Length: 319
Image (cartoon, helix red, strand yellow):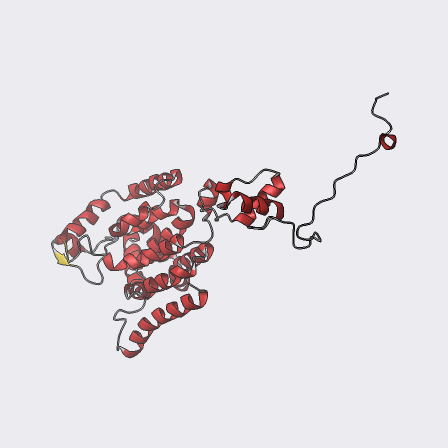
């Protein structure tokens, strides 16, 4: 797929949600930043000695609705700093940091044009602009996974949203990932009985379930698609020598062997011996003669080198 086609398809995909918002009254039903305000206020309330979860969430069954605190207590490590920051800085950083991380990771991976439309579909997926608009903490899980595509270990912190925890396993084959998991476990310890409250709030909730966050899956696919279509090795791959190696052609195989003085094998070039031999002499695939600048005519033979008289080299014996 060419870059022009990829850009055209991506723009077409982006145009669909834009058109929907333009023609639909109150397309984004919730106020801007409503989820950010919810968790910032919950963190401020907890800092002041109040409850993190709403009392009705612990009292008995309730239907999940806007305003419920559903993220686990370990999320307070993220929410508390924003409760302490000045309002303007908090609002700017809450969106600026995760969106900047995701954008930087995609640029760093430089995905092939073939995956651009797929990334566009995930960005245009209705849940993506909605959760971004409301400032839902899932945008930080996406940022953690985006960093994970580069360095592996940050993907652990996608567990901020446990219902999407399967994505946090990205990079679990690296030791650094397990170190990060141990760090996350240590960060969970200070909240003690608050974990029991979280479990109670989940048990009392109605309308959730295993597929509660299924509509948010395309958000997590954005960095994964960029990684799958990458043209640059991620730093973690480069450090471990596991990045995909470019396909070798006859020309660069011949060039390598000309520099090393080693013969080219048929298995390296994929050509018959005569063609490979020609490539080794010329540095070009499929040619067995001299270079394009050679003055030798077809059918001409090389003149033999005459012997050097002994008188010119001072005899054959040593002194």
